[in-house]
Amino acid sequence: MPSINLDHLFIRMELLYNLLSEITGFLGIDRLMEILSSGDYAAFKTYDGITSLIFPIIPLLVLLELALSLIYKKPHTKVYKVNFLIYVFNRVVGRFIAIAMVVLLIGWLEPYALFHAQMTWYWFIYGYIVWEFAHYLYHYWGHKVRLFWCLHSTHHAPENMNLSVTYAHFFLEAPYADTIRTTVCILLGVPPEMLFVIMFIDGTYGAFIHVGENLMKDGRMGFLNRFILTPSHHRVHHAKNPLYMDTNFCNLLLIWDKVFGTLQNEDDKVKIEYGITREMDSGNFMDVYFGEFVALYKDVVNAPGWKNKLLYMVKPPGWHHSGEYQLATKLRADYLQSQVAEKKMTNSVPQLKDKHSA
Image 1: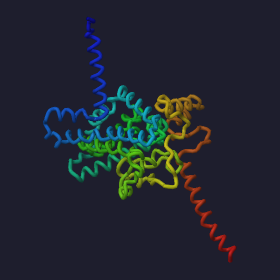
Image 2: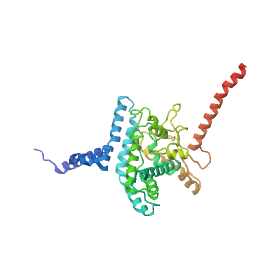
Image 3: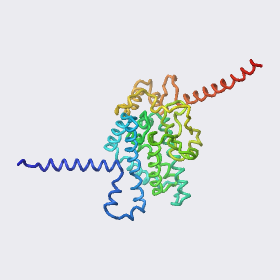
Image 4: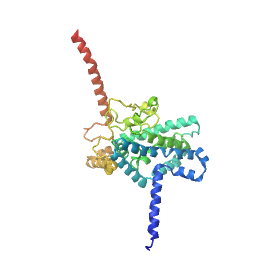
């Protein structure tokens, strides 16, 4: 009878346990399973219990979306594959960095807050507006500062929109984002307990707006498209069409996009083209994850003088020291001007016909 190597058996059991933990972690059902196994169903009335029911929604929708894409024979396996690799990589490398950053910033900055809001409904509205402003700043700079774009570009690399894009982030983007958002919120009086509630709502809705056409063909959500940022708005944000570039930086409330003039609704005449303008292989993990850093490194190394080297890091993507470049803002402005000129030309044609007929 062959002997059983207990060490190998324990290793296999540990690997199996870790695999199961990762699966339940991805599905967001860890806490839900704990509550169900304890039999303490009253816990579902608490904040912890409510979040345990909401957390699994997005991961389950990702699986449903993937299943529907296979049924409709539009699987976009390249996008799902790379986004899955990014998720795994980020779990290993950057698992706790963002959370630690938020906790540290709260401890450092809370004594310097201008005032301290209370946990009431009207202060909550104030807190959410402040959070949305902080999110706008982080997101805007992520598109307008080349170094920050390197962190954010991974999220824009997929050439198809689906819920798996939620997980496509460079591992240092969350600490960068939460540094800005937490700093602004704490200094402007948002209390930590309110901040964590807002972060949960924002994270859940922020994942939902990446829903693809397999689950939601028209992302406008009816009349809500006029009042909140919908999946349609976020699809526009992920587009590389000149009309859509660098627009819709908010996450739920449209207020700051309206204030700063960056709101852009989806135009049925302009089909969305997803991805980034740099030539890249969106099915290559290394290119998606590190490609912008490599491009920035080459520009910095080849730039003449330290001033230009620094400018490459802080100027918008597309900037060149020679002065021969077109930024996203210019491309969009040129497109809008061309549309105005085309409209004038179209309107003048009937007038010319009327003159000839007279």
